[in-house]
Image (cartoon, rainbow, N blue to C red; front, side, top):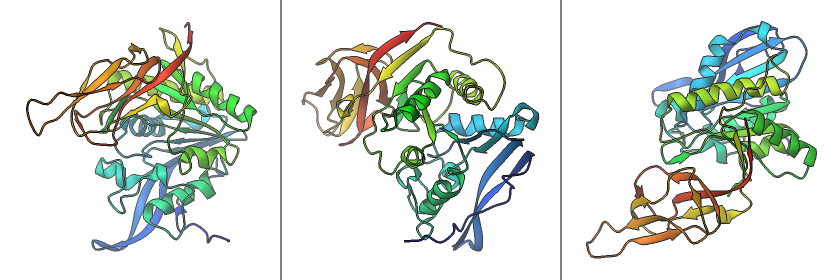
Length: 338
């Protein structure tokens, strides 16, 4: 089936040298704007021939390190600093970003579960389709900046995935390490089929993701890691000159081999974590208790680690429901010195 062209139009010229600020305009018709548009900010910085890097934030609207760092980069990056082309989209799912929510208030769409998208679908599906069919094909390397949002807190890491193409896999892993966060990860996804990651990787692109904190905010520490990482990414893939800067304390290389890394709640209640992010854990160790808030006199339910490793992510809010991820454990593969 041949898909119709995307309804989204760009106000920038992707082939023109220099710095351009504009929008990706998606027509909409709502109760408050009959002939309106979703306006997704975009910056293109181009200087001659060379690779193209696509930098995205706001895939989820409550993950602020990527949004903030890319807004700052769009304001600061000059064409003279670049060899090739850098496409910057700080607020990928703009309706979700404006609402401070993981999903879009327009259609409840989770953009990172909507790929490859549909030009005739909902707003979120149309955004996904434009990235899949327009922006990703013109890119060589893609950096998608995530953090834990309002419901998770996560150790800061650059991530790649296991791929059939081992050269593509190695190029992404090298980029994940070069991002220069305190941790680098080969990540196992519970539902990879409709991710932006997968849409890029299936087109043969080198894709690096991140998780950079969480709790629905950013910190000076998480912002410093993110801004250094974006610069490192552009240097590593040849779009900027300079030296990749690694963390002073070295880098820990992690692996998530399977779904046993995820600990999910089978109860509703108040969550009490017994280990902190970055702590070493052993198989069978209690990670958390869930306390029943509907009555007194009932013992809390203990949740235990199914493997050795370190706690690399935890639920941020204390209130927990059935099915929520409480904790994520990763294997330590190697500790790299600074």
